[in-house]
Amino acid sequence: MVKLTIVGRVEDGLPLAQDQTYVNQQDNASFLFYQQQAELLLKQISKDPLLHPKMTILLDHHSFHFLVEKKICYIALSDSSYPRKLLFHYLQDLQKELDNFGETTLIQTTSKPYSFVRFSKIIGRIRKQYMDTRTQANLSKLNASRKQELDVVTEHLNDFMQRRQLSGTCS
Image 1 (tube, one colour):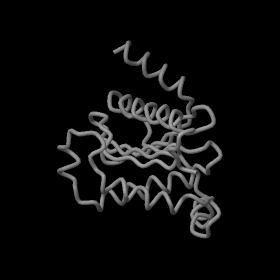
Image 2: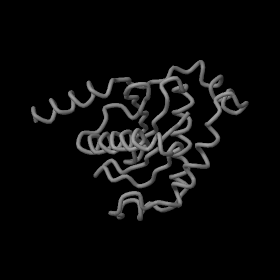
Image 3: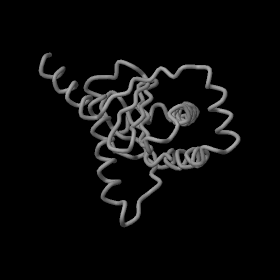
């Protein structure tokens, strides 16, 4: 299940919109931890762009998935057991919706984090379509892309951050 989604600008790491599925008293601390990690990863990507437009970073029993398109980074946190192909379909659907959103100038000029509340609602609507991996629509997406190999780099969070720190000190 997708637990957190953040959409942000690559050029400066500004988070534009967010949607989360679990925030209750017990999960609040873990949610804040993962939100901070996602924001940190977005900042890291803004300093040194990803070599690949699709990437998965493993952390504990969760995975951060990234899609970078048109200077926008789409980040989703899911359980590690959630099908990766389906998650990238989700991120691509978000990318298509943002393309149709029609706020390109506002996206480029806004300076306030999480200021796209309307898009956050769209994220929530799309996320609901991907909650159950066994729906006919989601199974069709998985089966349709079964023949296609997903070109996604996978790395553990500690390795990713360490490599980024080393590349920052060498330049």
